[in-house]
Image (cartoon, rainbow, N blue to C red; front, side):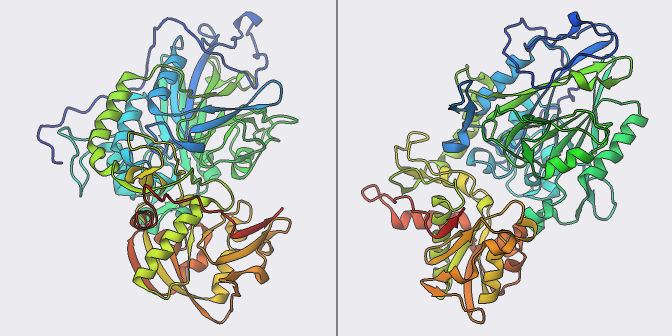
Amino acid sequence: MPATSPAHPRRRRRTNRLLVTAAGVLTVGALAAAALPGSASAGEQGGKGHGHGHQHGRYQDVQLLSFNDLHGNLEPPTGSSGRVTELQPDGTTKTIDAGGAEYLATHLREARKGNAYSITAAGGDMVGASPLISGLFHDEPTIEALNKLDLDVTSVGNHEFDEGAKELARLQNGGCHPTDGCYTDKKFQGADFPYLSANVLNEKTEKPLLKPYWVWKKKDVKVGFIGVTLEGTPDIVSAEGVKGLVFKDEVETINKYAKELRRKGVKSIVALIHEGGFPASQNYNYDCDAPGAGDGISGPIADIAKNVSPEVDALVTGHTHNAYVCTIPDPAGNPRMVTSAASFGRLYTDTTLTYDRRTGDIARTAVKSANHVVSRDVPKAPDMTRLIAKWNTLAAPIGNRAIGYISGDIVKDGTESPLGDLIADAQLAYARTLDPETDLALMNPGGVRASLTYAASGAEGDGVVTFAEAFTVQPFANTVNLQTFTGEQLIQALKEQVSGSNEAAPKILQVSDGLTYTLDLTKSGADRVVTDSIRLNGEAIDPSASYRVATNSFLAGGGDGFTTLGQGADDLVGDDDLKALEQYLTANSSAGSPLAPPAADRITIVK
C-alpha cells in the first residue's frame, strides 16, 4: 500500500555500543584457549563465562557474536529446518528445537551482557529464499528485524542477488519498492548496518558494488571486517540477478584488502566469507579439531582458510548451512578460527578476540569460540513479537489460504526426497497442460527450501497446507519452462549431477514419476550415474530420440552447473512454479483424501 505520511529521519549509524547491564551469564565452551603471550599473567586469563576476562591494561577481550544464512526466517522454522543435534557427554545425541527471531534476539542480548566491547556480524544470505512473512514484502521485514538485533555488519551472500543489484542497494539504503511501493505508512529505512561486497564488482567501473570493508572502533580498539561471497555466485543465481556484475576470487580479494587495512593502521581483521565447508559430524558441538586442527572439515572453506593472508585473524563463514568451529592454520602456520552457525537462526557463535593494545593485533593464541543453540526455552523478545505480528497481519489474507491436504510430513531431506518428487510431479502435471507431450520434469534440490509438515503451523489445523507454507518451500518465483532435449543430452544432464562443478558436492536432481536410474556412489565422477540404468516409464533412454522436459527457469538457464539444461530447443515459458505446486495439491488432495508422502524410490542408490 502507498505511504500516507512522511518518512521518519534516517537513524544515525550505530558504530559502538556500551552495555552496562547486570551479569547473568551463559556458559561458553572454549575450543581453543592457550596462554597469552608477553606480559599477560594467569590472573588476566578470561574464564568460561560471557563476561570476558581482559578489560584493562595491554589486552582487551572483544566479543564477536556471529550467525549466517538466516534467509528471512523470522518465525521458528518447522521440521528439520528448525532443529539442531547436540552431542551428549555419553556419546548419544539430543535433538533440540531451535531458531526464531524472537528467541535469537533474547539470546544475543543476554550474551552481550557484561561485554562492553561486543560486535555482532553475519556471513551473508540474511535474505532471499525467505518464508512468506519476509519474501512477500521483498525482505523488508528481515532488514527491520536485523536492525533491532543490533547487527553491526554482514557480508553479502549469493541470495542477496536474487532480485538483482538495484534491489540489494535498496535494502541497504532504504526506499519503497519500485513496483510494489510502500507496504505501510512508513517509508522503508533500509539497513542500519553495512553490507560488504569486496569481491563483487560493477562490470563497467570495476569497483566494488558496495563497501569492501568496514572498521569497528571503540576507544583505542579497532577491528576491520572484509566481506566477500563465493566466486561461483553466478552459477547458482539467475542470470538476471547478477547482470552487470563480476565476482572475483575470494582469497585474492581478502588478501588485497587486508593489506589496505593494515596500511590504514588496522591490524585486527576478520573476514566474513559467504562460502563454507562440510563438517565430519552433523552435531553442532562436535570437536572439529580432533584428531588434529581442521581435520573435521572439508570443502571450499578449508582451501580458502589455508590461503587467506596471516594478517586476517578469524574467518566467519556460511553458505553450506553447516555448523562448525574449527582451527585451521594460516599460511604462516599460526592457528586461526573458522566458524559457521548453521542456518535459519538456529545457532549463534560467540568468539573471544583478545586485542593487544601494544601491537594493535589479535593475540591469536588466546582466541576462543563456540556455537550456542538459539533454544526456544527463553522469553520471546517483545519487540520482535510485535514486528512479526505486524507483518503477519499484512500477509494473512494471502498466506492463510488452504491449498491442499497431506497425511504426514513430506520432507525435503535425503538424496532423493519425498518433497522433491512431489514438486517434480507437480511441474510435470502443469507442463502437460501447456504441452501434452511433456515427458518428464527435473527439480534442483537447492530450490526446495523447507519440508511440508503435518502439524499445523497456525490455526489452519493438522494436515492443511497453506499458501504461506508452500511459499516457504518454493520462494524463488521461478517459472516452469519446457525444452526439448535429445536422449544424449538428457543422459549428460543427469551425469552433471556428479561431475564438473558438482563432482565434489553432488547436486542430485529430483525427478518426476516414471524416470528411474541407479546412482552408484562407490564410483567416481560421471560414472556414478549408471547410464544403462536410466529408464523412462520402463524404457531405456534413446540417445537419438527427442524428449520434452520441464524444469524451472533457474535450471533452464544452466544454473547449479547443469550447463546442458541451458541448451534445450523449442523453449516454452510457463507460469510461476509455486502456482504449479498449488494447482497439484488442490487437484490431488482434499480434507477427506489427503495426499500421502511419495515413496522417494525413483533413484536406486548404491553405497
